[in-house]
Image (cartoon, rainbow, N blue to C red):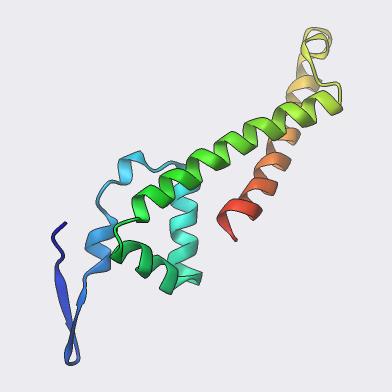
Length: 117
């Protein structure tokens, strides 16, 4: 990978803005959230990952794991709360409300664990 360098006082440092724009298309919602968190709150970790050319793999991995955990939590919570096909047939609106609530809770839990950690 070729780096562009920017002069900062007497030092030349890699242009991180240029590097991090590389393969954005493969990074999903949760990967982009993680990237923003690292840039704003864990700058040294972000810079380290960029310098080692591991940022894209890290973000894709976070996105994949977050989606997997959300789906797992949704199925577990739906099972625990008896939100199933019978409820869907009996009262579709109630089923949709409960599923949206479950999805939001699962997403909140996973975001806290995977993105803001």
